[in-house]
Length: 121
Image (spheres, rainbow, N blue to C red):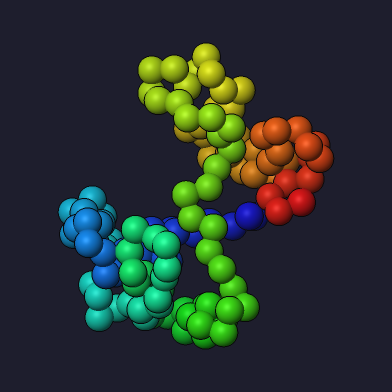
């Protein structure tokens, strides 16, 4: 968590019934990865049956395929759903500050079960 990672070009929608890859291309535009730049991996119980891993990360694919690595996607510090109209009053987190989100990830415990332990304890 000390460095940066463009997670949207690390784990990319690949084979999806809901046009998620096409949405990815539309949103990411010049920085989007073409399918021939991705290493496909299978997924179950997800919005896509396959995701793509950046082609420069074959070790990540091998670890995933061998079930020695998994992805936590779309995770964060919220303990309940909020929207842009109520997040300020419903959360104690500054959602749009990289440094604050970094701090929150290092002390993440939204239900105060084991305070200050960070992501995955």
